[in-house]
Image: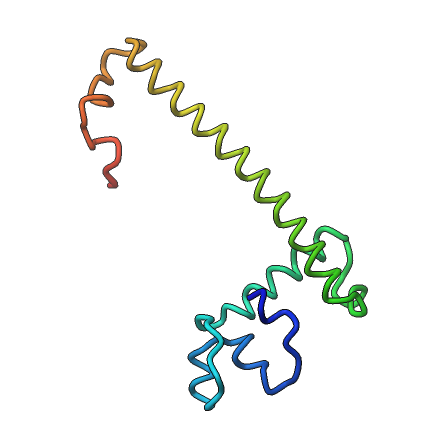
Length: 123
């Protein structure tokens, strides 16, 4: 995707926005993207930029592509880091629960560390 950020011209739109299957269908050179990847990535980046800046699409219409890309990616990293912190807290909580069970907090759960797959079965 990064190599396509500086590509211009409507003749390149299909390959970079809709992916290789569409490019090949119209006899264009594939660029190494799956179907819809460019559009999906661009849409997510712009949505992240708009959320971070509090602007509407109309207000951001004249923002430069480098501003949208850099600010959007920075906001995306911040969101991912928050998500990582949340997931790490959940992992610590589950590990703590398993350790409490292992230590005998509730003897009815001994199958948790004997290799039982009961806890992972779906109904």
